[in-house]
Image (cartoon, rainbow, N blue to C red; front, side, top):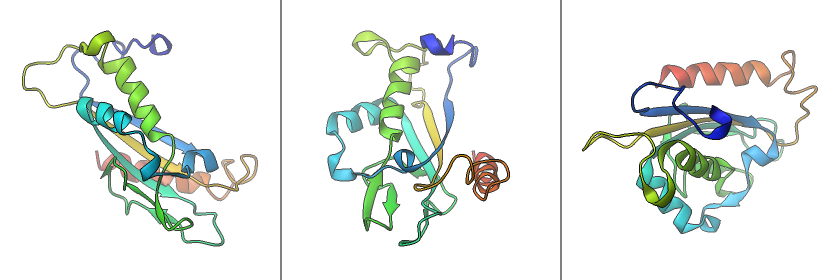
Length: 163
């Protein structure tokens, strides 16, 4: 059902929280700047859901510091993820993922609600837990015996306890 966009298997009533683990290499870290974000995407996402992200990125970098959200969930916005390498706020695929989740699970064509919501109900909340390192090897760095896999699992566990 999930592949067809049917979220009914997730819950029997209105789903108020969605949690996604985002992990990967440089494309997951992302190098898009806040200024490059499309305003209509931001408006669509913020109109339909409250979106938060916790992140730990670029631990592998040698020329800059690792940056994190300080083990806190931050509201997704133009200035959510700091890049020490670029000395600016950046984003990865989280905005596009948020948009697709909303389109698939929360709204139908022409803005109709897909999952029934009671009047005055809070907007659904989407949480992203992002752990990403550029310039790494999936075979060596991300294997269960590699340096990042245990850190990845630890970060996920810490952040899940904060929900």
